[in-house]
Amino acid sequence: MFIETEATPNPATLKFLPGRDVLGVRGTADFTAASDAAGRSPLAERVFLVGDVARVFFGSDFVTVTKADDADWTTLRPRVLGAIMEHFLSGMPVLEDGEAEGEHGEDFDPADGEVVAQIKELLDTRVRPAVAGDGGDIVFRGFREGIVRLHMQGACSGCPSSRATLKHGVENMLRHYVPEVVAVEQVEA
Image (cartoon, rainbow, N blue to C red; front, side):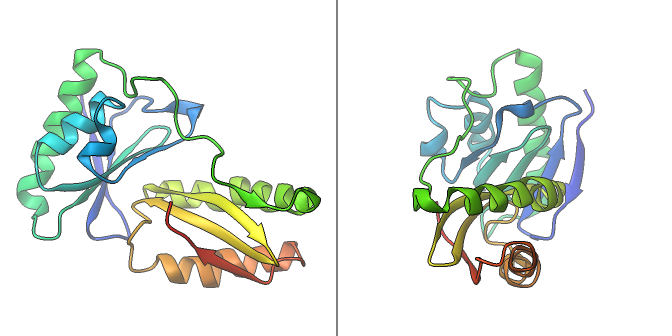
């Protein structure tokens, strides 16, 4: 099995491409600590066990891993590669329950349903593919009083350029296509 590794805009995060589906079309899964993975994801548990791992994120065909602040990719990268390879060769599932993250925690007035649908369509077609290319994801969390609330995951979470991406890229694009949007805010979970 050959696993490609790519750098991301976040220097603390690497993107691992195992050459097969990780979650496929089922969405994403984000684990911010080993305790989040326990009982939910054998793959994430295995990656956290190598040590020096701060976060594990699954996309359709990739795994992004964020290292602990004091860790060095020179020694950590081969350990993570080994853990991912061992997992896929074991035949175990990526997620125990088979369910990735769905639409939860969304906050918007039902009267704004049409506007929210436009926002989600733009995020899905114009933003998410680019963000996934960098090893992350962007999740809609809400829309109130013209403010779109988005959650950054994977390589994008904690990335030094994520705020600029939101403000200068995503916000400008949404304001252009959806006049009801006045601003974009990043929110945690």
